[in-house]
Length: 640
Image (cartoon, rainbow, N blue to C red):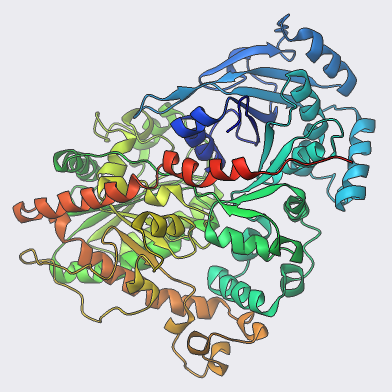
């Protein structure tokens, strides 16, 4: 990279991790190859609240250097900032936030710029909206009543002006729009007549496609088959699913075609972008996978972490399980949590016959971290997290809905029990007195036997692969973007787990109640199970479904109107078949985790294999192989 390279990240996660983008920024700013190549990094976001003190303004590990919101007027920045604040009628918070990788010790402190957009000069914003329509066809009048849209529009002109004030508006400056939130600033940079910014859209998802997948009752089973056929038929989303222009995120994401480059976090994201509009067929779209952690541990360390989890289960439920299953995720529809329960029901049937037990720790919530005193009160009052009650500080609406399914499962199951921990922070302070005192978050990654992640929509899926380096078995769906990186890391262009994806399982399920037996995993990676819930060949032809009129799996072609008729009943039958197959594979692969003397060598092999894969999937590897090479080739624009 050339000297004085500046990268500007426009996002909603400037001061804290909310979701996937926050994890990406953490990866970037603690990645040696990124820090070696990029001289200066700036994170830009709207200021979401003026509450709290100046000490809270940039979050944990933040240092405020200037804040007109708090009366901190640093003379080093005041002359330029005060002029802009007056002109735009805004407030500016500027400083640094330190990112630290506790494992490697690498840290950096990128600049952070927050703009108070509540009262920005309307005349300036209206002029900007006019240009957005004239140059890019964005009709802001359709969306300006939506604050989620309006705040990022207001951010854009101010952000460009402040970058100029910070001497960051140069040819070597690349503005990366993380998702739709950053697109108005990228478009403002394109419109800027005096600065040759480079612009890139970083697609952590495709919002249009996420909405379709989540809202349709057949979810991924329908969508990805329809999209595959649409590509063959040269059809695009508006033609297949109707006009999407009323959705503000669609309008902003579609404008990504005007950026110099587009980065996509997974293979399916590339396909989804191509499905947006014909212009994306020729757009410069590059895959930039996310990275995952790679840390080598011993068998003893893994077993010690598992013992803590087993002890926690004993404290909660009165028994020490043979196996520990986990799922760490956000509680949103796209995560497909009901699929976990379907798989577990099939495993339960085998465990009853084989006298084996398991606990499934589900760490998921849709709200912020609950105060410790509330957790301890709920624990004392009604045995949280074994039991829950609706309403704050316990179950939110979505949590209550899913907890009803968990209650049903636990009532019917004898050998597997689900513990729903609706709390951030896997520590005793945050999770109650029955958690072992020395428990830490990494224990649930190190000690788990199985990590689930069978999403219906998952552009990448960092969380699904985090236990990989510790020898855990990762179970995720074929639509997860991390499958592509896994193929690269494994050095193959073939499916990394053809057993599930090609529906070639045998009907027999190994008995794990007796002596340890050897299982042949030569047909797939033993640390990974990929479940393909989009595979229509697993759907039995009954004469009662819309799929009976064609054999899509064999001839590779189907009428798109037929595929659009795939409904809940079709998905339900496919999920029933696939979940049974996933359960069979899990049981086959649980042998090493019986913790017998003979299994130690197999556990060591699982750890070694997982680490060898993970070390080829770290942020450093991803940065060098994907992002930095693409940043280098971003063309310089010539203004006329």
